[in-house]
Image (cartoon, rainbow, N blue to C red; front, side, top):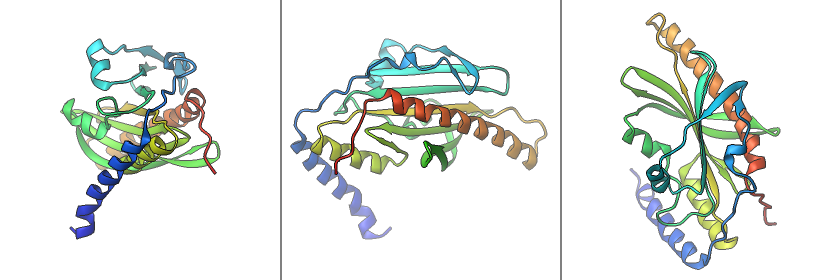
Length: 225
C-alpha cells in the first residue's frame, strides 16, 4: 500500500475534527410528515409495517424510520428500511449496512454499485449480494439528504462535515432495499444468473420508485452559490 493511502484517512479525520469543532450548534431538520405516510404499496406490491423495538430504535439513534415487508407472491417479495436522522452527532449517526449486515449473520458475497435514473439524472447506489446459510439476497443501499444521493461512505462523511461547518445541518437518511434471491431451480450458472437477475431487477424497480418519493419527503436543500 502506498504511503499516501495509509495517511489519507488520518488526514481526513483530522480535517473533519477541525470542521466539526467550528460547526457550532446543529439545526434539527424535522420532517414535515412521518415516513410512515409514504405510499403503502411500492412497485405495485402492498407493504406491511414491521415496527422496531424501543431498544432497536435507541441503538440505531434514528429520529424517524420506515420498515416494511412487501410480499405479493414467492417472487415479488422485498423489504424497505429508511432510517432518518434530523441531525447527526457522536452516538447518533448513521450506521453503514456494510458493518451491520455481518453482525446480523449475513455475509457479503459480492459488493459493487448500480447506476439508476432519477428525475432525468443518474445516481449510484451500493449493490450487494449477501448470504446467510442457504438464504441469499440482493441489497441496494444509499444515503439521501441535503440535496444529494450518495453511495460512498467517504464522500458521505466529507459532505456531512462540510455541511455541518458551513450550513449547520447534518440531516440524512439511510435507505436499504433487500430482495431475496429465489431458490435454485437448476443448480447451474444459467439458473443462478436468472435468479440473480430477477432479484436485481426488482431491487432496481423499487429503488427508482423510492428515490423520488424520498426526495419529496425529506427537508428541502438549496445549494450555495
